[in-house]
Amino acid sequence: MNFGTSEEESTQEIHIPADINWEMLDKSKFFVLGAALFSGVSGALYPAVLMKTRQQVCRSQGSCIKGAFTLVRHEGLKGLYRGFGTSLMGTIPARALYMTALEVTKSNVGSAALSLGFTEAKASAAANAVGGLTAAMAAQLVWTPVDVVSQRLMVQGSSGFVTACNYVNGFDAFRKIVRADGVKGLYRGFGISILTYAPSNAVWWASYSVAQSMVWGGIGCYVCKKGEENGNTVKPDSKTVMAVQGVSAAVAGSVSALITMPLDTIKTRLQVLDGEDKRGPSIGQTVRNLVREGGWTACYRGLGPRCASMSMSATTMITTYEFLKRLSAKNHDGFRL
Picture 1 (cartoon, rainbow, N blue to C red):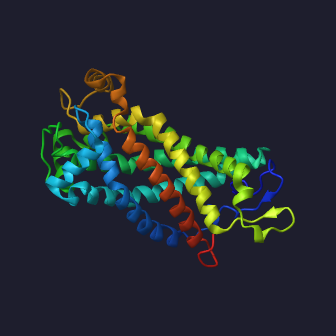
Picture 2 (cartoon, rainbow, N blue to C red):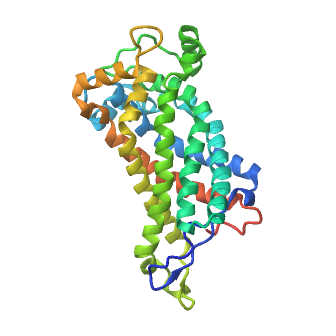
Picture 3 (tube, one colour):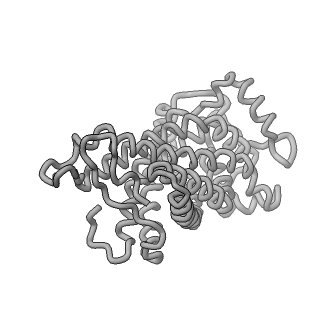
């Protein structure tokens, strides 16, 4: 599908490159290049995720920046990458499952919506929303156990947080969690993870589609290359396309982070903290503890790092993702967007 090849609101038609759907991709190249590119992106953004997680589980609230400096002072820069190996091992299969579900769903839903008479903009928004929802649900089957293990490693040694068990590495954490709680211990918080990430992804992809349409309709004509005008058609260059994608992704990331922050805080605590019995804390107990510690605003602990992380991640991920799709397109002609 095309994210709005033309915008009728402006006096000129903006001709942007058509979207590359699932059938147009070289699948082997898509997954191999995707694993490499997204591993690098995950590594760059991991410290922000770690600090967000620590703020969510600590019972006393402190400055995120101060906490980061304290961590580096005591553990060095490697402290910002606690649990990264475990996270990376799970990210690759989870991301592959996510991308497959996303692209297949978008392609099918988009085609169905257009055949039902939806406008291209509405069909695109619907396809993105349903695709994001489906992809998030599929990826959580792999990602939840990885999340449980990596988050426990992230918060280990954090000031203001006491853990009942110390872990040497990801394998040790995996073994101890299974021994204590069984396999179900690896899926602690699975239900609320679905409730967090499924709507978050639906909101993100729908917001991303709408934001792109608004940007192209509002300012697209003024930032396109003037020399490429052909009658009433304006063709933006690759830098303009990437800039619009990046801005739209950042907006969508901030909206999604703000809406789903309380659920994310509850999810993180469910996965990390120990309860009064082996089953772990309940959702009600977790909410009561948060409110008792800092009122309802405690549900928004780590909002700053999460907004920053999701905005940066969204901008980086979407530009990387679109670049990956064009590199993986069958018979693509170079790196041109």
